[in-house]
Length: 599
Image (cartoon, rainbow, N blue to C red; front, side, top):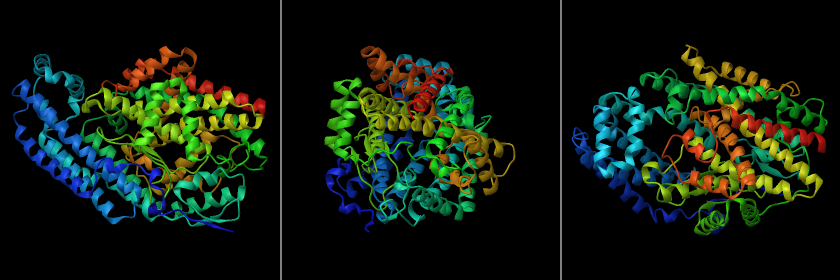
């Protein structure tokens, strides 16, 4: 009997670590950039009171502002990623705290810009754009600013809010520390009879175990840990919601949701359409859950039975190098140029591959405008991990195309469009694997895996979105978020989504407490809308070929240069209609029908 311990970072081969030194070779050069940002910010304050004097001054000021944020973003990304390598290193915690302080300082120093700009009339600003060529790249920024005019406060009020940002981020910081640094789940006995430490990184792997005792044990231990801290976490989340609600009121929005969606000019109907279409298709999800119960042959289907694949395939490890090869085949419909960029990125050191002690759990794509689009993974040699690599690479390629084609001002993406790029890749990979699979068992396994993608992204994230809407509305209507209320409402919602085939258990009511995304409110619905859009786009690429692919690559180059709903139209999808969500749901329905036939 062995004991599977997580490696220390120093024990991992350098070729599997990201090349973060390409950003800063040492702490001293990072410190020097931070100091320079503060100096530049001090110099920037000389624009106060002069911004709208003439078009030239405005162009200079906006460029200077971008230069400061570009450098600051780079320093922040580096500090964040250094901390993510190992959250237990005090020096990295200090670096991260320091940069957050600098961001608050810079935000406060620049808080005069928007209110001062808006003291000028719409006509003045538009005439500035017409007469000054250097302002042409800021035309959309200015148009967007004018749209939000009624929600911008006075110079003094904006300054106060900016200075408070360090305080208002507290619930998220507290939860992150509890979740990543302090919380321990203990060990369980895995399927091989070995003692294995239970972590955020391997929890889902255990939940997919074909040994029911392993699943139950992992599920119970994780939720016991959250249950033991439930009042603290409820308190933290309650203050996060209050911060959203108060912030929205201060800025004269009708609700926290309206405030959150306003940034991307996303109509609230997009959110409501998503929830209503998903509810319309809940009977299909209930059918799938019923099928799951039948195939697993259990008297009572429990929440810890929901993730296990319905088909057991021989345990086949997929080494990381193999994952890269599969990705190359699966993404072939995106063209050779796309794939060459991907392979060059891997060579350059975009990716941090394996889990180590203290490393942030999960996976992400991150970077600054002038760095590599880095990827953090916790790769554990499963087919599921191959999908994670492909997903994150979608984000990184989106960043790569955008930064090459857009100025810093438009160099990032809204989450609304970002999730499309990652999910198109996953859909293409899945279609590729399903098409070439000749083994009946493997085909069943892949169908089930695809259905699970829909369940965990489209259904689950919509359920989260509905929960967030409920919690914020409850506080807006004068309610108080207690642990009891949160647990009860979450449990009811879970029952609505999963349907009658799922038996009650003592733990699922605590699940809301382990979702870090809830600290970025009204964020997760975009995973579901993104998934719907991506399902439509990948279908187009496979059916229409080159023209659809070129339109999609064109979309990848647009960054933030227009509103998300408009940008997606470039790729041929209209998210203001119910159509893409219905199309995705119909795809889900046909997959469930196919699985019912083949099982």
